[in-house]
Amino acid sequence: MLSDRIVIRVSVDPGESFLDRMIALVEGAERQKTPNEIALHILLVGLTIVFLFACVTLVPLAKYSSINLSATAIVALLVCLIPTTIGGLLSAIGIAGMDRLLRKNVLAMSGRAVEAAGDVDTLLLDKTGTITLGNRMATEILPAPGVKIEDLADAAQLASLADETPEGRSIVVLAKERYGLRGREVDHGEHTFIAFTAQTRMSGCDISGRIIRKGAVDAVAKHVTALGGALPAETEAVAARIGDSGGTPLAVSDGARVLGIVHLKDVVKGGIKERFDRFRAMGIRTVMITGDNPRTAGAIAREAGVDDFLAEATPEAKMRLIKEEQAKGKLVAMTGDGTNDAPALAQADVGVAMNTGTQAAKEAGNMVDLDSNPTKLLEVVEVGKQLLMTRGTLTTFSIANDVAKYFAILPALFVAAYPELAPLDVMHLASPFSAILSAVIFNAIIIVLLIPLALKGVKYRPIGAAAVLRRSLLIYGVGGVIAPFIGIKLVDLVLSAMGVV
Image 1: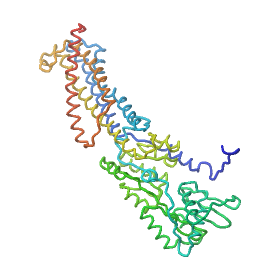
Image 2: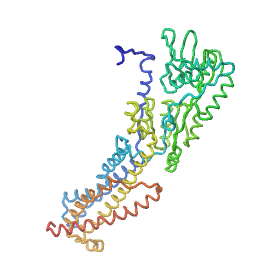
Image 3: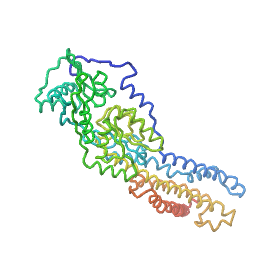
Image 4: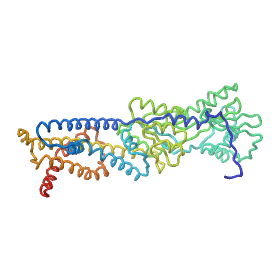
């Protein structure tokens, strides 16, 4: 509190305020499941059903063969055959991914969010503060034909006195330093300040019968047209030239007359183009989101090297773009820091909120960047891809391991009743009981041995899906087939030496 009272002004009807619209959009947002998550779920359920059916059919077969297989033995066999290896490691893989992001000062709300980052197809980034340095500064004032530059500077300063944005303050400073217009006392009885809104895209001041406005060129043009004026062709050409150069033109009007243009300049961050090249190499499409006009947005997009841009973006337009991308089967990542970004952050598969942003943005996203560095998404994506590679390799090992255990145990169970199976009984286990007990013990040991790999993760290499699959099949697939035969036999020998079986 800076005074002894709080003044609240209600400018719209209840239910129609900016926050009400943001809350409604956030509540309507729904994140989709990732393709990898769906595929793994189907695989695990399918394998569980297959091995459940296989174990159930062993009961009548054992009775017919006069083999004593108790219900406990069947359950133990089922437990070590179904995909318990990858099931037991999934949590460790997710926690490890969250831990790796935390080391990069990114707080992930769940392992699922990290996984989704590895599957991202489209990346949406705000222009200001992300692609550019932000804090656009007024660099020059360009009057319309027949308008004195001092009159334009005076009107621009009046329209910016109540504007607390960096852009508005820079206009006041430029008028003071370059044109000698010192700060003036504002009498609220004579002055009525008009706040900027996303709908009008203008701010201004009503003073002594004058209606002074400052804002987007097209918005000011509509305003003066409604008052009986028009936008001069020369001023429109100046605004187009500024937009083509990557700057932002703001028009200033006094009543029905356009006084001229204020040139706001924004600077693209150094090294940002190289980062977008790395995203492109990963197959990720980058889209710049900005409230600027299409000319300005296009110029900055070309300079930054993004694949596409969305100009004159509103919260609804951002959310609509994300839904359109998701309808095509793509996963979308979004960075933001403002309340107006909250709906898009909630709808995106990966929503990274800046720590310096609003509470609404941080609650809507599923990650928070503690350094507030939006370009860190590159590291987030790489960690996500590493998590996916780790889970893929361990899934390959788990499937091969489970199938190998089945073929290692089955001959040992029925070789006594069916001597024809002797060529398949390569391990010559001590007894059917020893086969099942050894498999259960090996199953518990292998999960413990794989935990360090799950936590450390497989090193990410951008070598393509086909090369990754070949590598996983060669190392973890073949390894998963061989390991059970060796491991179960060793456990069987230990149990026999101890006289357990």
